[in-house]
Length: 297
Image 1: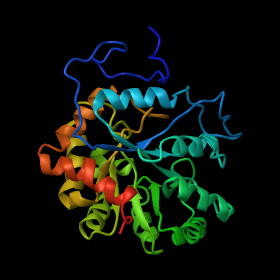
Image 2: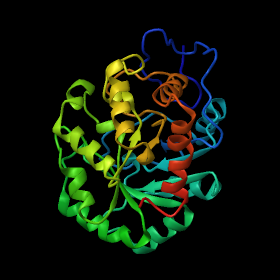
Image 3: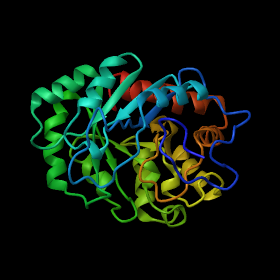
């Protein structure tokens, strides 16, 4: 059976056969925000040469249909590496949904200031640095911080905190608000015992950084059922739930492990956030502060 229209075909966990209807799908609270999604339409927006992966198409219409089914009312578009410096897709999507969407761009040391200003006017509120495909370059990060700091943006960083336990703090020391991606991006068992994860929790506790509950399949081979994934989420929430947001990572590109259904990922979020107050904080109020309010600090 083929994948649903517009959605990349992904490996499924046991019991989540592709195309099987999901009964009693989780619905998130009114005002919920998905703080991490991508859109891929190669025919309209060609990919960059030298990219690290080539995703199947995942158009905005498919994403919005998923949001409607789960009760997601707002979103944060994250510019993916496959487009390189070309932000045409990013600009078009934000311009089409100025109230509903905000964005995280990818700024380099040589990005024209006019581009950054235009993205800011369209709703960009951060830039992303990815250290997974190549190691961290603190000098380059320092240059990027200097470019976006005048706009009040934050720096969203994808980093394996086990292998680079001090990087989040080093970026924060540059005077930049930091959002750590994807729950530490390391196997959950080793992550829980690591110095890097302890550092991240301490930084959350001090109110120095933010983090995203997103892409649990990057920290577990069976993220839909692995209790260690829940332990990671709970440890972050106990540290400081007022500095945590949630993201679907739709359409889940380059996952190293099987990806649960979108319905299961939403249900996991509700399991991690069992009380209404925490759900309102993580899914509604924290995104409002970080992306629509006065900034990350």
